[in-house]
Structures are given as structure tokens and as C-alpha cells.
Length: 177
Image 1 (cartoon, rainbow, N blue to C red):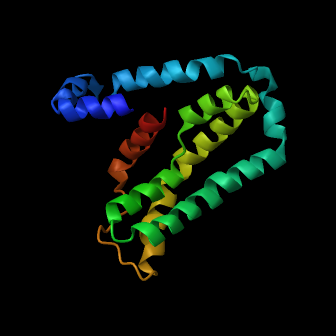
Image 2: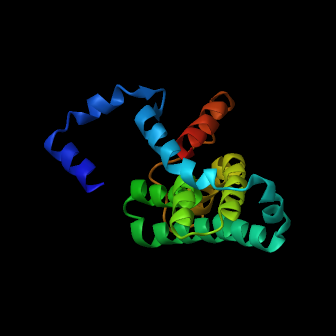
């Protein structure tokens, strides 16, 4: 990361070079890098054993509780407490609390020699929840809850128009895959 920041600092025009490799909102070298990064952990999964993962209600419940209740609320509270004078950063930290980085979860689990089956199963479950509930949670946390707090948003949000909904879902998928 340091090398990338350094190269960008000494050669600001490098962004034009990398933008030539984009298709829509997807950077092709980045997408290839994510696939290369996720392939080794996913290649070790014994997919026939995923049924065990989904039959373990305790693990599924804990994962959903941490990822969809504790994480987003914690990031919301941290954003309101520490970043209320910087709404762009506050919105960013709240959205990071909602958007788990799927590729890194797989890689960290692989490096820690964790269960590939549990990692793949829980990532799949949370990916489905992310596609279905990200927009709803983002609206609730970024607009609805803030209206009742002392902090008044300086960047008003609007619910997505219906014609933009498929674009929002594809952007979420492209960002996290």
C-alpha cells in the first residue's frame, strides 16, 4: 500500500494510466487481483461439507448478529462520536461497518489456518445478506437515525429511485467481489 501511495504522490498522472483498464465501475486489474487472492482459500473448500456449516444454527446466528447488528451499530456510534464534524468520513465509516470485505475474510481465515468450509459458508451467507440489506441499512443508519440525534446531516440522502436500483446492486456486487 505504501508503494502505491508513494507512486501516486510522485506521479499523480498514474491514475489516468489505471483508469484505462476500467470497464464501467470495475477496475479489471483489481478484479483479477481479487480473484487470484480468493482462489487458494476457495480451492481448499470441501463443498460437500457445507451442509454442516448451514446446520450449525449457533454459528450462523452469531455471524449474523455480529455482522448485521453489532458491527453496523458500533461503527455508527463511533462515527457519530468522533467524526460528526466530518460528515464525509462519518458516512464512510458507517458504510464500512455495513460492507464487509469478503475477499479479506477468506484470506485471513486461510492465513490463520481456519476452517475453509466455515469461512466459505459464512461469507456466502453474509454476501447474500449484504446484497439484500445493504441499501436498507445504509439508508436507516445514514439518514433516519441521524435525524433524531443532535447531529444534523449536512449531506442529505434520498432513497434510490427505482430505475437506479439495479445499478446500486451491481455496484455493491462489483465492489465486494
